[in-house]
Structures are given as structure tokens and as C-alpha cells.
Length: 83
Image 1: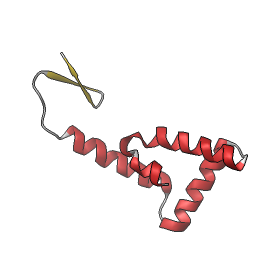
Image 2: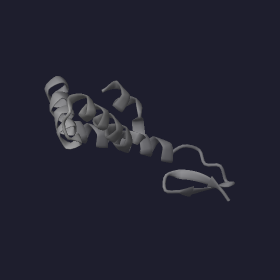
Image 3: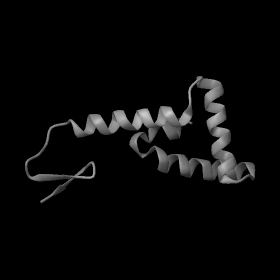
């Protein structure tokens, strides 16, 4: 779980990678591993795993998007690129 939380805005990529590893270890499908993680999270934290992740991503993107802008960079899809 800590690895998933540490990924921040890359939650879904991290969750996909972690669930694949869990699935291999437990010899179950990746979907079953994802369900098991979500159920365990609800039992331990008392909150919905996906809703918590969505809220965390929204905070992460919101904070990044409100940061100072470099006039030499163009904002595209949440990332800045040199123009």
C-alpha cells in the first residue's frame, strides 16, 4: 500500500503495477488482486479506496496547476513544455 500512496498523481499506473505483482504472488487474476486491495483498504481505513485516490489526485493536480508559471513554457495537459 505504501508504494501506491507514494506514487501521488501516478496512482493508477502504480496501482496497476502493484496489483499485477500481487496477482502473480497470490496466483489470482489482476482484477481479483485489485478487488482484494480495495476491500482490505476499506477494512483498515474505513474509506473507499478509489474515492480516496480520486481525491488525492485532484489535490495533487490542483496544487500543481496553481503553481507559478514560467512565461517561456506552455501549459499542456497538466505539464509544461518549452515553446
